[in-house]
Every structure is written in C-alpha cells, then in structure tokens.
Image (cartoon, rainbow, N blue to C red; front, side, top):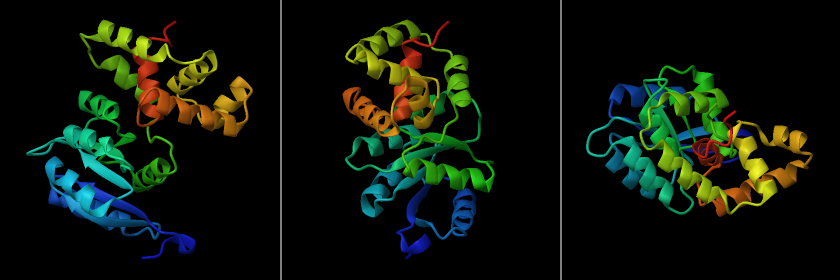
Length: 226
C-alpha cells in the first residue's frame, strides 16, 4: 500500500480489550493515506506476539486489559531491538499508570476522547522522533502522583545523571523543561544538528528509550526545583 507521495505509510497497531474502541480507531485511521492499520490485539500478551509478527511503527496501547495490561506489554515491546513507538491510551488525564508507562518506554499518551487530529498528530510526531506529551502534562503527572519512594528515586536519578558532561547536563535539563530541539539550540547557543547529536548521546549514555525518559530522570533528580 502506497502512502503520501509514494512513501510507505506509517504502520499502526491497535491494542484495546474493547472491540468498539478498536473499530472506531481503525475507521478513524483508515481515512488518512499516510497511515495503515496493520494489526489489532485485545490484551497485552497478544500485543507482544502481534508486534513480533507485524512489526508496526506505532502501537496505540490501552492500559487496563485482561491477561497482561498495557504497562507490562509496553515494557516488553520497548525492550526489543528496533521496537515500535508506543502511545498509551487512557480514560483518565492524570493517572499513575500513565507515568509508569512513560518509564517503561512509551513515547506519550492520549485520552481516548482526543480529537481525531490529536491522534493523527501524535502518531506522526512519535514516528518523527518527538514525544507526544506536552511539558504541562509531564509536570502535572510528576507533581500529582504520590510517590513514597521519591527520596530513593531522586538519589538514583542523580547517580545516573552524574555521568554526563556539563553540556550534556544542560541539554538534559532543557529536555526536562519540555523544550524542543529548536528552543534548546536558541537558548544554549548551539546548532540544531549539535542539539540532535547531544540528545542521541544522552539516550545512549543514560540507557533510555526516548527524550521523555530523560525528562523524567531530570524531574526525579529534582534538578528543576526552585
């Protein structure tokens, strides 16, 4: 199937235990020539098998499902080489499960009642390498979720970040603020290609999946406090 301008369409898989939700998403996505729904699954365990069989670019992942939930499925999917991006679907705006999904490697989340253009934009965004999660949402998630292990998590995050150079640390903090590559380049006086290089090195050095997880580490380390 050809996409826009002859390019291969974005391959999307839908994971939700509600057949009506899957049908609605399939119909919605089917209206865009640059997106192709290649597979569906009704629970997290089936989702892992499905990914290995169809190799989608993006997985739209529900959280609460039988057998294996979306958190476990996201963690298993994102461990693999060349793994697809995962966008978590949730009914709740602030949900401790969403934060855990981000820690497991998800590139962002959507509300199930999101406008069609938001869903399509999120899919295109994560394929392009940008998380589909606004800075405001990151801050609200972190601040509103009660975490009795915050002190331990802070110390561990600071230890992980201690391997960074001063410049890498500046870029990491900028990511924690939710800045785009262009904003980081302007604020820190770098070229855009240099910023992209720093972000790639941070992902490798910190052993994370994406820039969202870098931002979470910065928040865990409380580098933005005050």
